[in-house]
Length: 314
Image (cartoon, rainbow, N blue to C red; front, side, top):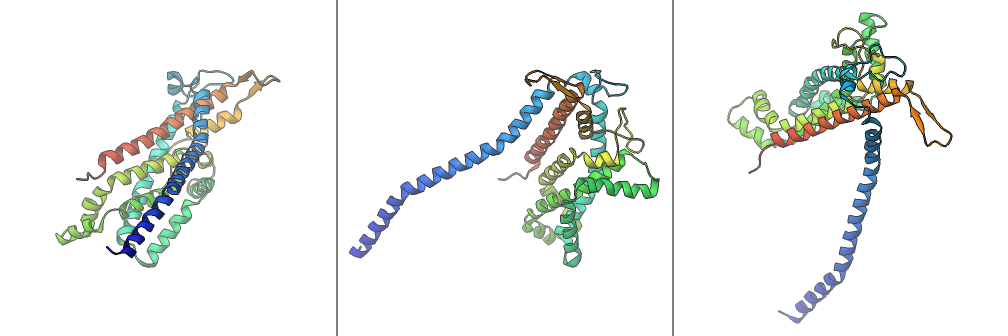
């Protein structure tokens, strides 16, 4: 090895050695900044969960979960949220039944068949629908149903349609991204065996992406289950149990929380140390805790589905 080459190698080694402490310092600094950002982001979430838990845990009981507010007046603490829980499940279930087929088929079209102006138009309108305010969806459904059923019509299915307007673009986007992750080699291998395209989509594409599709759909459900404004407009409120989405008004947990909190009162002493909280406030906090638990269970279900049905890598 020549002298010039040895000198160059030594200079390079010296340069790397001198820059090593600087790289370690930058790495430590970035690690600290990332952890600090994580802690700052978690503070509001932990504060929210702790506040709801402290204020709502004392109200949640078996009676609170199994009774409605039928015939409950004033400060009577015997009412519950059973009618709101059932209303939430029924309306959200109908919304999912409407949104999932439409959103999934639209995503399949955009990924597998969509070309040209029509596909670009569908993508544009999906993006527009993503930014629609929720109250606008409720007003749209009310205006549409008024044409056919007359003014004053309020049914649970109207709320489901309003939620589906908000849910469809989320389902389309999430399913579209999951379908794009399926390798083209799988499609081409299926075509090479003589399998038609529609059967390839069903047996190969959808089966490969079923975990991601299910997770996206559950997250879309969790996104709309907490909507209040469109349901106030399109469904109204009731204190009775109604299990028929096609007849009469219904109440959901978000609407129940809003109504109870708006009617509640809290009287405090001048020192603000001792407050007497109205039972309506307690009902609102208890219902909020139940709603958070429902959303959390949906997210956990999405994680479990993703783990169980994800393709196994060997």
